[in-house]
Length: 189
Image 1 (spheres, rainbow, N blue to C red):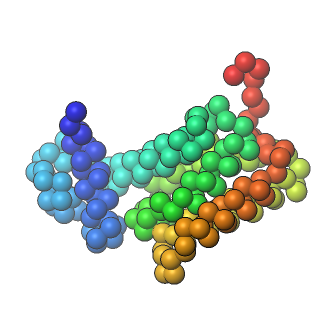
Image 2 (image 1 turned 135 degrees about the horizontal axis):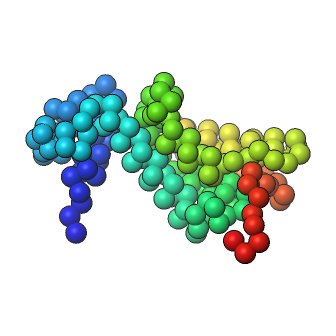
């Protein structure tokens, strides 16, 4: 099955960001990269803002797919501990890219662009219940995992895979045994 032109456009736009940064996103640059006409792009994305939102949604969706793959289930079926463990493992796999970091940073300037990322985070790290020590421990684990992910995306000084894995194991051991999900689970779910 051929990939849709929409996905072809989004993948091309990501390559443009990789090469030229977010400011390099124009209909012309993305159409050229995708091998499509401007009209073909306008069919899927009527404005540059719609294209940018599409890129954010596309990457956030890929991130959630990775989290589900690591957890072996969707967020609503996972316990709080399983969600945080999946988050840590996804962050320590070393799959982060500078493009994702650039787009996430750019997304903080717009609630609309931040929404896809926030939606994923609200499902995978909805820590709102528990005693202060448990919540603080879970935040420390998340912030450390985020820091490792950011380090990998910047890659000023590459980290050996062995060390990244060791840090990941240490973070997993730090997850409190009574980690809460922020959502109560009903019997039979």
